Length: 124
Image 1 (spheres, rainbow, N blue to C red):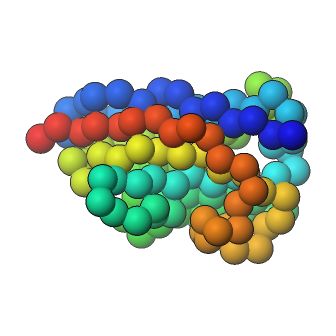
Image 2 (cartoon, rainbow, N blue to C red):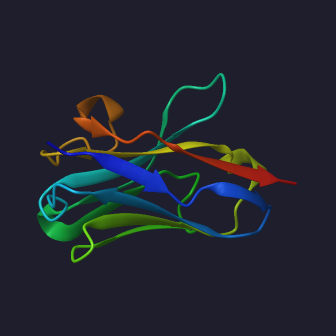
Image 3 (tube, rainbow, N blue to C red):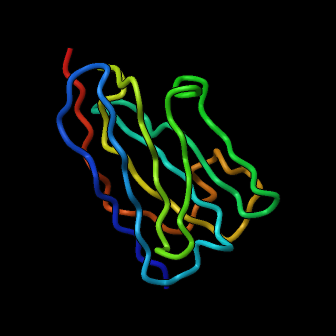
């Protein structure tokens, strides 16, 4: 089984940077599609970024493109979300997710495993 643990969230000022980490003890990141999603209070879960091992495809939501970067370290079995130029509207709980398929990388309903989430708060 896959168990995902997010870390790296916190309270920062607008314009600052954070790097979120998602670690898995199952050592399956080399073949799984990994995604980052976020959810603000009263809002629906929103796709942020995803990495598909098949073809090395990377996907970003328009709202974060150019500011966020998803990457992975196979040796550490960890996927990262580098977040730069953070804005107050980025405030949300960020979730790491994984699935064995690559189709529909931006669709949250297709993911099999989810982490507990890490809070990111960006002040003005």
